[in-house]
Amino acid sequence: MRLDATIAAVTDRVIERSRPTRQAYLALIERERDQGIGRPRLGCANLAHGYAGTEEDRDTMRAGGAMNIGIVTAYNDMLSAHAPYYRYPEQLKVFAREAGATAQVAGGVPAMCDGVTQGFAGMELSLFSRDTIALSTAVALSHAMFEGAVLLGICDKIVPGMLMGALRFGHLPTILIPGGPMPSGLPNREKAKVREAFAEGRASKDELLDAEIAAYHSKGTCTFYGTANSNQMMMEFMGLHVPGAAFVNPGTKLRQELTRAAIHRVAQIGWAGQDYRPLGRCVDEKAIVNAAIGLLATGGSTNHLIHLPAIAMAAGIRIDWDDFDRLSRAVPLLARVYPNGAADVNQFEAAGGLGFVIRELLGAGLLHRDLLTVSGDDLSAYAQKPVLADDRLAWADPGASGDETIVRPAGNPFSPEGGFRILTGNLGRACIKVSAVERDRWVIEAPARVFEDQAQVQAAFKAGELDRDVVVVVRFQGPRANGMPELHKLTPPLGVLQNRGHRVALVTDGRMSGASGKVPCAIHASPEALGGGPLARLRDGDVVRVDAESGVLEALVDSADWAARTPVEAPASPDGCGRELFALFRQHANEAELGGSPLLATMPGL
Image (cartoon, rainbow, N blue to C red; front, side, top):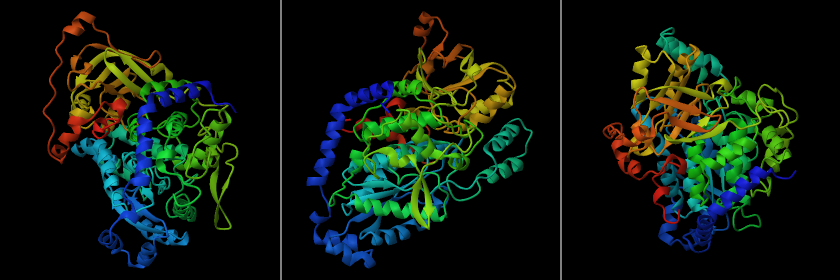
C-alpha cells in the first residue's frame, strides 16, 4: 500500500527542516562509537572499580568478549507502574547470561507520580523531572562500561526523559522494557462520577477515597489511556519495544518472556555483530512521525505534544504542532479508550490492542513500514500480538476486532480525523484534544474568568461564581512561570458545569492531564503569560472564542484596545517543596511547542 500523501509530505517537511541538526547528531553518535570512551579504552583502575560490585560476572567481563548491558531503572514502590521492576535487575542478569552477555544496573532515575502530586506544590516539579531523568540517564551511561542498554521506565515524564538522555548515547543499542498495566479495577467512568459528585458535595471524602483505591488497586500502570500508556503506545509505533510488550499485565508468564526476549535481543544487536541497531539510528524522522500518527489514531495524551518534540530534538529532529495538525486531518481515530471511551487498556488489549491498530494503519498506507526497529527492518512485527505457545514466546495475527466499540478497522473508524487541532489567534498558539469532546462543543464563545492558579478556580466554583457560560483562563502556568503543572484538578468542576448545561471551556498556558476528556481545553498556550504573553492581557469579562472547527483562539477585543493594554505582572516565583532548586530550569526552558525543555534550549547544534 502506497503511503498516504499527507503523511509523506509531513515526513518530507520534518526531514528537510531537520537536515542540519540531524546530520550533526548522527556525526556525534558515529564519533562516540568510534572515538569516544568505551570499556576497551578504560584503565585498569577504572575497570576494577566497574567490576568490583559484580563478583559473579567479573571473569566474563574481564575477558572482554561479552556485551555488558547497562540497566537504567526507574524502580520505586511508591509508584504502582514501577513497583514491578523490583526484581527485574536480578532477572535481567540471568537472562543476559543465557545470551552470553552480562548486565549491571548503571543507575537509577527519579520517577514521580503525577497522580500523587496532582493539585499540590510537587506538581510544579513534574515537567522538569523529565529533564532531571534525562540528566540521570546520561550520568548512568557515562561510565563507558556498556555496549548496550535497557531502560526500565513507563510513566509520564519517565520514558521521554530516559529517551532524551539515552539518545545522547545513541551509538548504543537500546530497548525499553515496560512492566505492564495493573488488572482492571473500578471502571474509569464510575470513578469519574464519584469525583464529580465529590466536587458538588454529594459524596464524602471516604467515598471518594474508596472509589480511587478501587480504581488504582495494585502494581502496574494505571488502566486509563493517559500519558503513561500513551508512552507505551509510542514505543511500539517507533519499534523500540519487543513487539507487543506494551499492555501485558505484570506477574504473568507472558510478561516474563517478553522481558527475557528484550535482554536477549539487545545482546544480538550490538556493534560487534552483524545486526547492529543503535538507538540513534532507530529513532529517525519516520519513527517520530509514526509516534505522532499513533498518538492521533488512538486518542493519546496531549502531553506528548510537548514530549515528542523534546524526544525528537534530542535526536536532532524537529517536529512541530503544525505537523501534528496536518497529520490529524489524515489519520483516522481507530480506538476509544478512557477518557475517549468507556474501555480501559486491558479491554483495549483484549479487543486487539496496538497490534490491531498498527496492522490496520499499515494496510491503509497510514504508517511508515520501513523502519529500523530493534526487532527488524520494518514495522510488520508490531502488527502482531505476543502469545505463549508451549510456554514459548510467539506472535500471532490479532484477527478481527474483538469489540468495535473499543477498536475499529481503518475502513470504519470512529472519526476520519485524529482528534488534535492547533488553535491560533491573538491569544497565541495552543493545542486542543477533541477526540473526547462532543462536536457541538468544538466552538465555545463566552466571557472569560481569569485566574492565576487552579486553587482560585476551585474556590470560585465552590462559591457558585462559575455557574454560567464561561471560558476559564488559568495563566502563569507555563514552563518558565512555575514549571507547567498539569491542571487535572479542574476536570471535575468543569465537567460539573458542563453537565449543568453551560457552555464551558478552559484556556491555559499550563498542561492538562493525559486523562483530560469531555470539556474543550485549549492548552499549552504559547507564548506563555510570563514575559508579556497574550494571556497576560486578558481581563475578566473579555469574550473569548475557542474554535476547534476553524482553528481559532481569540479574545474578541478591539485591536487598538488590545494593543494598548499593559500585561499584568506574574506572581512571585514559587518556592518550598524544592521548587526553588529548579529556578535555573525555569529560567532556561523553551516554549511548550519546542518541548518546554531547559536542556535542549541551550544545547549546541540544536
